[in-house]
Image 1: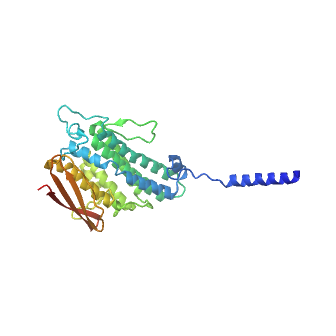
Image 2: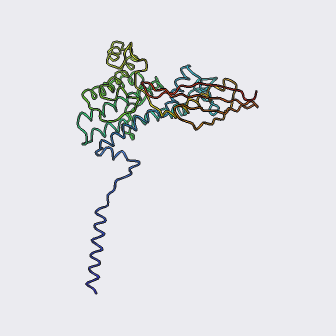
Image 3: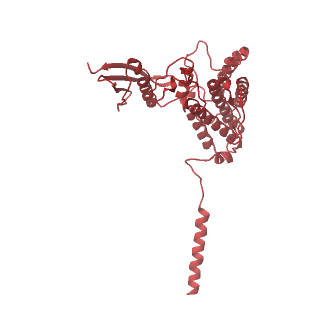
Length: 343
């Protein structure tokens, strides 16, 4: 009896050992940490970083355009929910800009979110043993170019208040540098990106926004277009002309040739329709709106918007949206009809 018990115990212990030996921790696949990327990122992991970086380029981009458009007196932003678009941003009365306002903090954090991704991509590519040197240069050149672009957008917003350039170490951020120095460092970063892209091999996918510029020479042209803009800001006219010659600019070429942020087509339609109703209709004396979207979507669609005023008048707005195929991809074309249903 004792012998039998010993056999069962030995068998159980051996089974437990095998089960433990086969267990493997894959980490959080839905939310990988920086350490996972920095240890030895695979090509797929690096490509995910590229896709995430390009995706975050769109974050709060609309708010950024609101900011520079209103401050630059190119537009008015009508919002019943927040008067600061016509007080703080326009400087109405004794209103002044706030360094804690949503119009600066949201935009600032969104642009630096991209910068952080670029820093991570650059370091992860440098540490990876799954890609060769030419491929590393592709990832690093892309990261430096996009990082410079985001810093330039931020600098255009804050102007002489400056920006932070060195943000690699979140626990020990670099100083906020003044305008001229920031431009010089952004120009240097673009030059580094150009050097990396020279002879690089691009193995990562990009969206349709980079359709004609998704390889190393194409990204280098995008890089030089940004460098030309920086050179103009620095009043370095000869350098600007040289950079333009190396960019995608063609004087007699297609006017829409370039690199774009790409939004899903349905999202574009809904956003533009809603934006029109929110910003333009108040000028027509309509102070409140109720919007409902149609469900039809087969190449073209009608989007009816029920517009209820504060009075008894009811307006019906019809958007006819036709999807046109262009060299830049699918583009919505809008036709508008406004009817007063009370009459």
